Length: 621
Image (cartoon, rainbow, N blue to C red; front, side, top):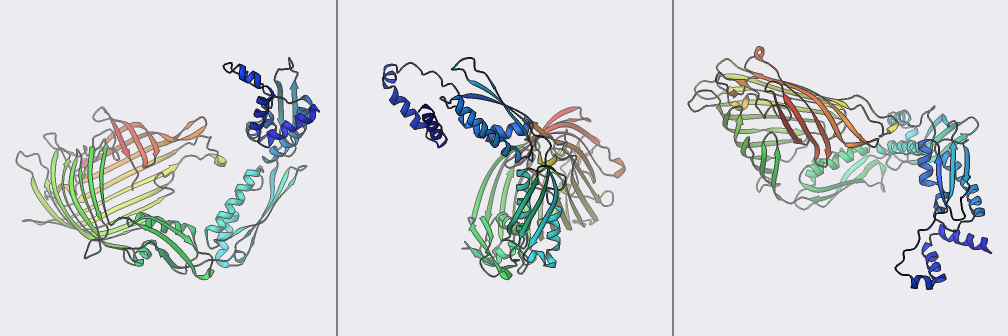
């Protein structure tokens, strides 16, 4: 009778009715509960304590999923019932350990005799996993059009080459599942949007400790893009969406292209949200792309407050009109004030044409500290620009009028110039805004003439490069292993070619120093030193930097922080032979913040023998 009652209680516990057990306990002793309301009940004695011995991964697995542990808090568990549970637990352990690739483990339960009837039983589970099962033969079979279409040859090859559970690797259930999911993602990422897994088999030979794997990928039909089916438009037309999305009709389906098109629409500023999906319910040879949009407000006013060690406290006011009446262009007007720069300007940008080129006109009034001088400048620009995922291009005419910094006691002279310019930026980073590898390169080339009584020709070139070189990676995706980090290499060089004595606007010349150039020195503090000790912009620029960025680990896991060690060097001069590098060295930290990388650096300027703190947020190239 007692055994039957205990079995019933255990069954009720497993089916999730602990409240009923508590109610029965209260009903059995109502007088005690009522007569001693202020006396706390003695803590329930657990039925047993279990210690698991074995490799770390096995202890972690059993600690999370072993069924026996569910009975640990059952207070009326008899010895006979525990014996039955231990027999079931051995089978459960064997099944769990098999998911890690160990099919012949040695399993032993040991029980220490209780010191009294009420003492907690002390159990020990020892697991010796034995030799792991390794992958032997792997067969990836393709069904459907992917098996025969010549255009799918490269995709088939990539799926086979990227199969993650290779012969000789240890088999486990999680790796087997991950390998199948990766293959399926690669199948459905191009052409075959409705592809699915067919028959899969993991044939385990426990004696030979080998696994023969077979997976079938059924591609389904190949999809080609049809037209865009757009919803959510009110003030803009479908042509704008088509030009921003840049999804050519009749192109093969590519999930990456759809994601990129969605990102372009979201980043355009015209829309608050954009969502693209493929409508696979119709003809695969002309599949509509469903585009769901929510338009942004026609006008937007943004007030900004910020700070940096380069410019100090910063206040900005920006107004955007997405569709200026009469011309339909976008107008962005901005006022910005900080310690180094005060500026007001406006920029008009046309809608993109069929090749994604836009007309751009801009005007700006600016007052800024360049070296030791306070420089007033005005500029007008007109040209065309093309912004892409990997490359930006623009060409333009520009008029510059600015003070020319000198050490004379009189007011600075004013110079003006007209130039034609071409600029481009190439980006090949693995991920933004937190790249781990890749490179970027940009260049500006221009030439023109000074204006005024004497007109002199000049040329100007500026180039910059940034590269990330990983030093090591964690194996098998194990983030608990600390990576060796990466090297960040940065370089910049510029030159203005003109006859000696030519009076050029200061805004066409170069200065360096600050958060993103040569740390350890103030913002634009490195230039040409005049006889009276003042700093002025120069015609030649050279900057280089090497930085070791290393992830920080906490409790064996990589965190969102990185430590850095760096050395920067830079120089500005009026002649190449006069370039003398000023060096800065230091240490810092990086944080993957929601708005981009947060840079915190403490640098020592070797030339000035002074420490300087540098703070900066964001990544741009």
